[in-house]
Amino acid sequence: MKQLFFTLIAIFLASNLMAVNVWDGSSEPWTNGSGTESDPYLIETAANLAYLAEKVNEGYQAQGSAVFRHTYFLMTDDFDLNDINWTPIGNVNMNMEGYYFAGIFDAWYHNIDHLKIQSSADVCGLFGGLGGEWGGIIGENDFGQIRHLSVTNGNITSTGTSAGGIVGGMADNAMLFQCSFSGTITVSNNGSFCGVGGIVALAAENSVVEECSFSGSINATNNGGVTAAAGAGGIVGIAMNKAQIKECYNTATITSNATLLSVAAGILGATLQENEVSIESCYNVGTLNASTKGGIFGMVSPINPTKDESSLSVTNCYFLNTCGGTTAYGTSMTSAEMQTEEFKNTVDNYAHAYVMDDGTNNGYPIHGLSDYKVWEASDITATSAKLSADIHQGNGHFVEAKFSYYDMDDGAINEMYNVIIDVEDHVELLIENLIPDTLYGYMLSLKFDDGILWVSSPRYFTTESNVAVSSFEAPAVLVYPNPATDFVHIQGVEATEIQVFNTLGQLVKTVQGSNEANVSELQAGNYLLKITSAKPETLYVLPLSKHSH
Image (tube, rainbow, N blue to C red):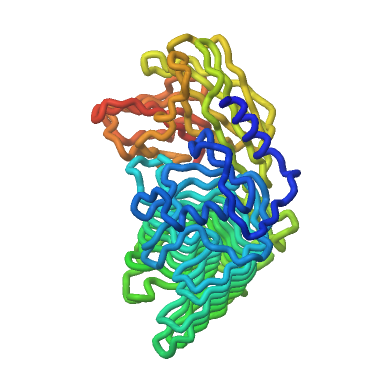
């Protein structure tokens, strides 16, 4: 049954030939999946998506404000919402009070067309709220995520406080990855403040917005009198402490109007509370209209504009010199400069987040939209197992895919086997002649045409119990920076020993009694770190990419 499900998933993910599902305004429960990572609930129709909104908004089996925590959803088709007024998924206010979606929603590069929202709610968006509530283990999917989703011909009109294209409010530690919105967002009220974010209206502490883009127009207008304020950002309206915005771009015109204060910025409108917010590898070419205009960033807390700005980090960010930006964040460049491959390489910084324009973005870089899914091993016997993955080339260009697997008898990484496979939407590999009663690890690596490698986090299975060992999927440690050039640091555990193995399974370096390793002498490439901890007594295996200087 599990293998049949994986086959069905592969068909759904690989096919772009299905007719667009047009919404009639109804809702209907999903009928496939169990909500786990390997067996997600399948959102096959727009009516299924509307049912998700109903369940979240009623607080179905909520844990506090969080609904569908630890639960996975996969969108399997393009939806046309038919310009029927949409009820956002989640009904939180600016303080994140109410119910929000706290699961993992993966659209896998499907599109939602003709989204229409007319709302007076405090906060609105396709998802009204996306949450958070960190589970305590770095890398664990214990927080809300929306991935691989695009919205086109969107039209959001609000008389509430704030609106975002994809999400209204993000709670602590929520994440958006590879999402885009094209359309118009308008917020107009008579209160003390109104705000817009092209992707997210409010991003709370430790939230992440990565590889997202906005095009179209934004208008935030406050008619509240002499104390009225309005603000807008092409990607995020307001961000709180330690929020991260990475590899995003805006091409939209952004307009903000208010008597006391109006702010328009290409990427982030303003910070709130503490200012330890980071914006990295982003660019803006959209026109700005407001009293305060930021090519990248607008201003520190409108509530307390005297706060120190020194903790705000804006790195490798650029804006068009004619956009109207006046604040001192990011680098001003001409249109001709920003349409070159040199600029694409600079803003990309080896991440393969950007590629050259394909004719859809006036010559400016677009997102590569490349990614992969590595599934749990299946068909496990005492001596064999099937490895599988889904690959999305996007606008990038993978030239090689490879599965690497190795046994970990007695906790040691023994010989590693590498098998090159064809780069296809869905790949499978049957591995045989395995050792009975043995723990195995495996990874997928993908090589771009420029030689850059992406390597997945290790997954594990054992030939003893014939089940995948999902607890090893997300170890409670963080290796940073990764990729590294000189030193790597281990966070989240006290390491008694760090061993570095190359892709042949050879031990190339050992560090005793330290959470830091000098890797400057290693050749550029991909490695595995075997980290041993005494407190608690645990073994971790994590990938490391080494870049040359």
